[in-house]
Picture (tube, rainbow, N blue to C red):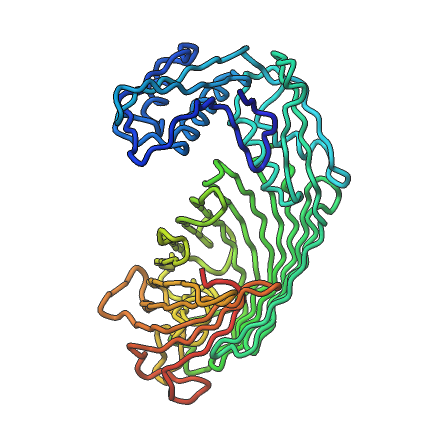
Length: 517
C-alpha cells in the first residue's frame, strides 16, 4: 500500500490497493458500493464522500475509476486528521457483467502537525513564508491546509517551485514534521512591448520590477507608455508581507498625458490602496487617490464638455472573482469597480461611477478550440448639476486594440457638432471571440463586437449599438504572444472625423502583445 510521501506542486497520492482483474471486452458494471473502516469520519462527511465518489452504482468499473475513488477516499481521511490513511478496493463479482465493490479503509494514527522547517530560500526571509502557513504545530493534520499553504506561497511569485514534504514518514509519528522546500527565481522582471493601433499608431510599453526589494516580499514597479497620443509614467511600491498574508498595501505615483486632435488632458497624482484576498478566487481592493487634472480643449468643444481644471479626490472599491482550472486556465471572471469623487472629500470634481465586467471562457472537448466572451457596462454620474464635475480622462471612450477593434483608440463616443469624439458617461460593450490552432505556433481568431458610449448617465439603448467583426492571427514567440487583428465596422459611426477629416475607411489594423482579454 502506498503512502503520501511528498505534498508538492504536482500533488499525487497513490493509495488504493487495486487487485488485478481479468481483461474483458465486456465492461463490468458496479452494482453496489460499500464503505468499511470510515467510521472515524463524521456521518455527514461519510455521506458526502459516498455522493462524491466516481465509483458508484451503474458505473463501468475501470482502472481510472478505481484509482480516482481510492485517491478521493484517502484525501477525505487526510483532511480529517489521518495522514497515514490507506484504502484497499475489493471487487466481489456477482456475475459476468456485474460486481459489488467494497472500499476498506485503514485510517491509521490520528495525526497532528509537528515541527515546520524551511529550506532553499536565500534572499527571502523565513518569516515571509511562515506568515503564509495555513497550519501550525499542534493543529489537526489536514491535507487541504498544505495545499492552501502552497497556493499562498506561490502567490508571492518569488519562487519557481514550492514543495512540502512530510519527513520521517516510515515511523508514522503522531506529530507529522513537514519540510517546505522552495526554489527562488530572480527577483528582477522586465518586459518591453510594441504595438500598433489605428489613431494611436506605434506605441511602446516598458516595465521593470523588483519582487523582493528588502527581502520581505516588497515589490517595486516602474512602467511607462509612449505613443503618438499618450505619454504615461508610473511608479508603484507594494508590500505583500504585512501582518496578515491576505492583506497587501500599495502606493502609486502616476503621470498621464493624452494629446488628441480635439483636446489635451493631463493627470498627475498618487494613490494608496489596501487589497484583501478573501479566498483564492475572491479579492477586494479599497483605494484613495488624489490628482491634479488639467485640460485644454478646442474652444468649440468647451461648452459641450463643460471641463475645468482642478483637484480630483476619490475613493474606490474593486471586487474581483475569478475561477480557474487546476492548470491556471481561466474559466470565468467577474469584476466591479465603484468610485466616488468629491462629496465629503475635498476636490473640484464630484461624481459617482460604477463599471462591471464579466468574462467567460469555453473550451471544446478536444482542448484545441476556445470561445471567449466578455461584457462590460458602466456609467459615471455627476453629483452636481453640471458635467464640469467629471474630468475628461474619466469620461468613456471605446476603440483600439482590445475593445471595439473596428475603431481606433478614442474614436467611438458621442461626437461634437464638428464630428470630434468627446467621450460619454454611459458605456456598454460585448465581445465574442473564437480562437483556434492553425499550425505549430500560429493560431487564428474570429471576433464579433458590439458597443457604444452615450452622452447621458445610466443611458444605454440597444438600438444605438455599433458593431464590428474581423479575423486575427496569434503568434506564440519566445517573447510572448503577438496578436494581429483586422476590425471592420459593420455599423459605422456617422459623422466621425479623424484628425479633422471625415472617416474614409471602415477597416482598422491592430498589432498588440497578449490576448485582448
